[in-house]
Length: 276
Image 1 (cartoon, one colour):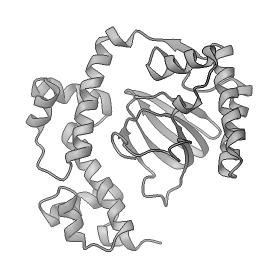
Image 2 (image 1 turned 30 degrees about the horizontal axis):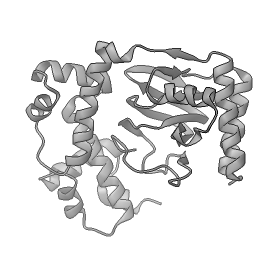
Image 3 (image 1 turned 60 degrees about the horizontal axis):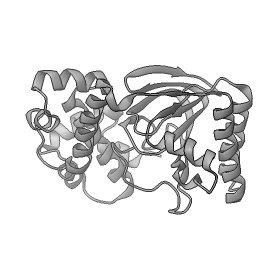
Image 4 (image 1 turned 180 degrees about the vertical axis):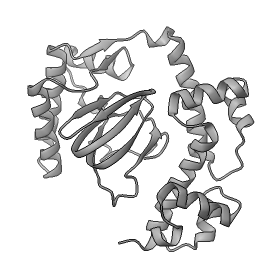
């Protein structure tokens, strides 16, 4: 997944998309990122080591996890197959005041939904939703199931109120988001640690400390990981030369690119492109 995802998930009038992640998928390892949508993760098999706002979770088979909007998150699968359902609840707003009030509080961050879903009835509802989306059920059915799940979460108090607007951590997290967005838009250009720290308005040392604390990687390691992700996507989706892909992904030395690519993926760029 990209750092700050700008694309619309699903159709404009139905912003919901299901992603199936297996070891063969180019985005199998989830690079730290954030977006304005809610993301639901369902682990089909194996273990998924998930990090959300620097809190780690080990998810196992049949676990369901809700990632709230604007949470920085990433995941490393271990012999794992998992699915991600991404949607923006804004399209569920209607003329009902109570529904709109709850959805608005989710959208503006006043409340956050529970993370790991433990309630059996709610988990069963999520399983049904994933299945029906996968099978292409009618939009009416999917929308109804989303309303049902939000209703279950609300009725069972599966959410917390937050004072994020005055919380120092939230303020610093927003600074990190600015940097992530900058990397997303400028990864092909020369980017230095000093320029990123200046963008965040922090000293180099403190920025490096807080960035790693938030994402699990140093700023430069994160930048390299993102460039490798973009390069891997191009290797699988284009016929461009490896040299061009390397330079277009922000690398200025082909030998270094091949070395770093292999350390991240276990394969050379050429073998990665030709893998079955």
